[in-house]
Amino acid sequence: MGDKHGFRFHGGRPSVNFTATVGERWRDGGFERLPDPAALGRWFTEAGLTSADPRCTEADLTAARELREAVYRLMVGQVSEEDLATVNRWAGQPPPVTALVDTAEGLRSRVVSATVPSLLGSIAADAVAVLGGEDAGRLRECANPECSLLFLDTSRAGVRRWCSMSSCGSREKMQRYRAADR
Ligand SMILES: [Zn+2]
Image 1 (tube, rainbow, N blue to C red):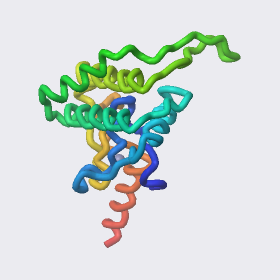
Image 2 (image 1 turned 45 degrees about the horizontal axis):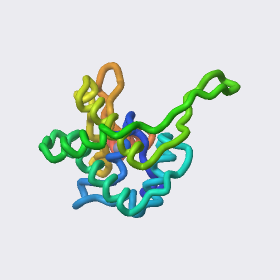
Image 3 (image 1 turned 120 degrees about the horizontal axis):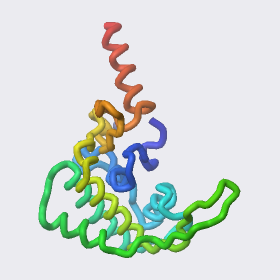
């Protein structure tokens, strides 16, 4: 499975991927992929939300984890006024500043300035779009019981079972072959 503490980006949307920064939630609280503020900065850049590390503080990390857990609970159907308020408060933040840039491939949009509140705001706004739209019915938990990360099933038939075919999907296939051998 590679580096267990590496970030997972199989969720299909930034807000879903953000919930994957806690791994193995089934295992008594799971493990934290954002152990310090620097890890949060790395996540923002690896997620492609900004190209420059926004230099997160401890307070940013605390706020990020609060938002993440609120988004997670709403995505698994545990709705509360408190979590709605958390998500909606962040969703009201001004978004990162983008600019149009003329590149060799044509015009492209680039994030030119992204503060931590603006980045958390864009995650919250994405969660609002996912949970408040038709995609909400396509949120799934990975069928690999040792993974159980959330992902958005964008397959036309809506029958995808794993966050990633190459990791969780092939793992289950292998187990089925082994079971058939016995
Ligand atoms: Zn999985």
